Length: 211
Image (cartoon, rainbow, N blue to C red; front, top):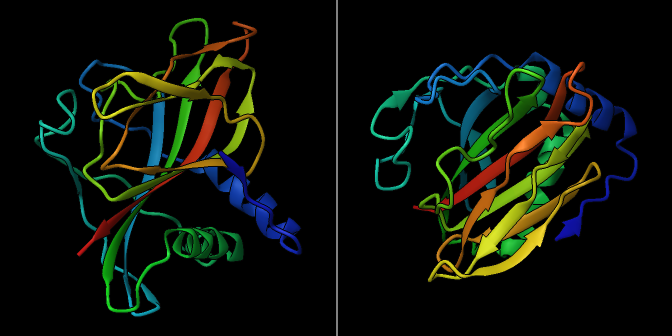
């Protein structure tokens, strides 16, 4: 786990976090849940140039996602103000530096804004599909905020699904970067600390795929 630092981007950080307050409901949960809200965008990175692709549905095979895969799920796109946010650009650049992209490589980057909610009526399930791989090369999971919740622990497993480590992302900027070829991962349910109030966990997920 590491912590992103965003010196000089205080205003960008506020507006970036606030954009999670306007996520549409995920209407593709096959368990009938109403606990997930999200937006989706796709980029290409080619020889140092990051480009937004035209909006497209998100697809996962049932092999990767037995619960919600096998269909094209058309989530609402990122807002233009979020795409232009300097903090968002810096997060992507930090990942590129950590992964050490080679100039000759082309990459596809899928970006997801997730809010998982919990209240007296329903627990929140960050990974309802359970322990999984995303079929990517690398995965960033970064916390924006946690409010009125317990749980939401990131569990990382070896390639033979033995628990390797457990990490709770607690503060804005806390993040983990996973090699999807080497590990499996999942996140425990969240429960509201005060059942009379809404609890939620906001994360940014970026998946990096070599083209």
